[in-house]
Length: 97
Image (cartoon, rainbow, N blue to C red; front, side, top):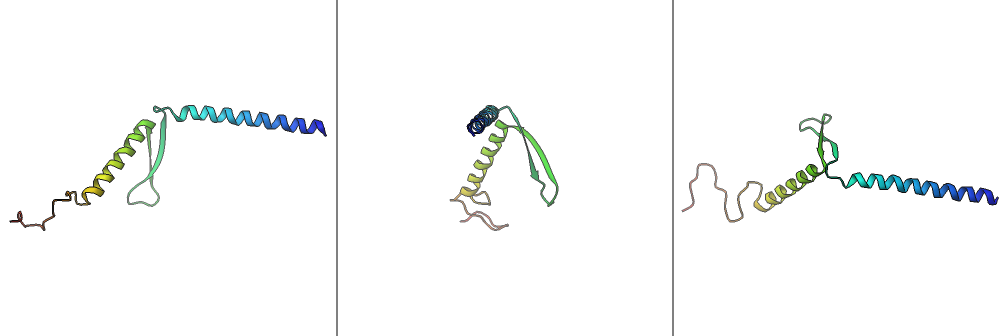
């Protein structure tokens, strides 16, 4: 009985160290900004077609930041792109007097 418990304990130690080594190897590549990441994105107008895009991790971060800045500008300025102090005029109307 004691031999079985020792063998089980050793098996747990080996499994824990193997999973720790696998995680540390994965973590090293996760911080690399030059690694390539591929993502599938849906195509506008189709429910099934998807386009696969591959960029480096740094490029994905730059694109995400640009999207966030653009969304923030659109939320601040409004959907029509006019500032808060500007007013939209109907088509064919001149400047307000």
